[in-house]
Length: 389
Image (cartoon, rainbow, N blue to C red; front, top):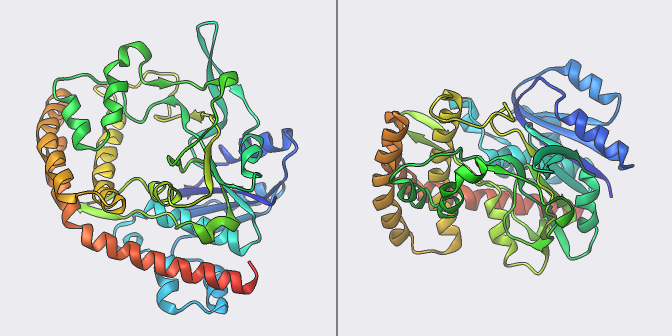
């Protein structure tokens, strides 16, 4: 199986962690077909040359990919569909790229360059896991590619994925109104975990030798392998950008769409229970302190806005009662936003109810964007099959 590694980034200015994943693959006798680097702003081509000594490298710039565009034209895609797949107005206007479009660039490049499987890694994850050994937390290297291939090679499996070890994206917190905040953010499950933060400091550990492999529809974009021949049965990634009080914010959950659609397929997505290390806040092993560290507070603020931006589309996709869910979320987010703003002494969080209103107001625009993306993507996949993959 020709395996490519896909990385999305704003600026490609470091070999970390790509070099570590390549070294890990080599150590376990896995040949990597190529590394696809999708970037939106800058690229240090000296680093590309350094990587090319080990592996084939495809640097692809958002809104400036003439080779990809040329191939799509040659395949017979319409100008309109090519624009939908490759054009990013939000980058031109606001300097932002939706996560979904970023990942789709990598998928398209992988398909056009002969890859058979694409493994996505984020720029802050590593091919090792955090485990508990004699009451001490230690890092342990694992066969990252091998763990994915073990199940991806099975005919009925089209995606393998898993969660992360490291500090949870939501830092430790505890205040009256916290439950309402997470109901409003549609992250109710997080509340139970956070409520007991004093026992674990929101640090997730890998199950190590007690792995539990299971079928799932929860896909994590930074720890996922996709069998590319299955894309005719799957949708692309999808997310959007929305404006809150004059600031353009990226919605989260570009990988959620795949999971929902997978439920309707007879193929499987398998959680390989390999929680690779995610250096979430860039300063592991320091326990995240949102009150003292502004960068952690900032990240949580934009994460909240990202979930709010995702939720209306997610609910529409699931066929839920939009009005009923919105009313429940709004009632809770009004309470939760005031509570978290007071707890963190940060008035920015008071805008969360307004962000929710804006997000639901944008739903019609977002669903239109999604339908257009699906139409263009299906055209691409159909023409790829005619061409012979």
